[in-house]
Amino acid sequence: VQLQASGGGLVQAGGSLRLSCAASGRTSNNYAVAWFRQGPGLEREFVATIRWSSRITYYADSVKGRFTISRDNAKNTVYLQMNSLKPEDTSVYYCAAGSGIITSSLGQKTAYDYWGQGTQVTVSS
Image (cartoon, rainbow, N blue to C red):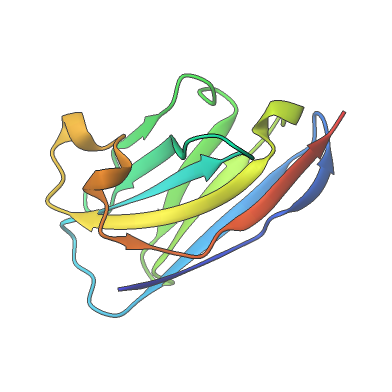
């Protein structure tokens, strides 16, 4: 599975961005696709994830109500709509995919086998 992340950029606080993660290769309905982020000198942290078949979503508390993860079957793409952005959202955002992940592990980066390259999101105050 290959993942291609895009859509990052520079935005003012309160603004919006939409990230895209295009998947190619051998995928299945058993997959979950997630977004993680990593700020300078920080650990990579979970942002949101979606189960491909059921569309069930999970979010980190820090982004609930502001970010929305969704997927487009026809385009094999997962999106992360980010609204009401804050300076603390500034990070490199990564998409990841994995199969057969149990619910309690969906927020753990070690549960995901495939990673895309990061896309930089910078929110100015």
